[in-house]
Length: 247
Image (tube, rainbow, N blue to C red; front, side):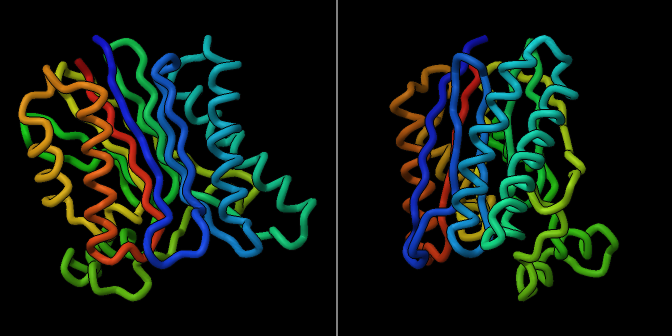
C-alpha cells in the first residue's frame, strides 16, 4: 500500500506571524503538524523545534516498536523545547501542540498533544481520530457541556496539555488499521476551528470522488481549498493541514 500526500501552512488574515509548522516525509511515512504558542516569537520557535526534534528522534530510533517510538519522539520534542525555554528567559512558557501520523505495516499510529487534530475520511464519512486536550473538551468529557455549548465557550482555546511547558508530557497514541483508499487529515485549530467537520468532509469529497485515482496534485488542491475556506470564514489564526491518501 502506497501513500500520496501534500501539506501547506498559511499565516491567515489576522496574525502578524505564523506560529504553525509542519513536517512531511513520504520516505519515512511520517507527517507532523505543530501549532506554537508564546510571546517574543516563542510560538514559532517551539513549533519549528517540534517538527525538527520529532523526526530526528524517530528516524534515529526506527528499530523501536511504533507506539513507544512515537511517544518517545514527542517526549523528546517536549524536552528540547522545555530546555531551550529555560536557557532563554524571554521564552519561558513557550509551547506547542503536536499531532503526528506515522505509518508502519498495515497501521497508522496517531500521536497527539494539544488541540491540533487528526481525521479519517472513510467511505465518504469523517471521523476524528484524536481527542483535544482542552478545557472545553474536559467539560464535554464530564458532561458539563454539550457540543453547542462548547462551541460558544470563550475558553475553548485554553489547553490543558502542551508540548514544552512541563518537564514531562502525557502523549496520546491511537492505532488504526489502514484500509486502501482511506484519507487522513492532520491540521491545526486554525482549520478545524473555522471550518466545520461537515464542511471539511464536503471539500474532501468534492475534490476526491474516488481516492483510488487521486494524485499528488489532487492532494495539493484539497489542502489549498481547505485553507482558503478557513480564510474565507475569518482566518483569525494560522492554518496548517496535511492530507494523506492510502492507495
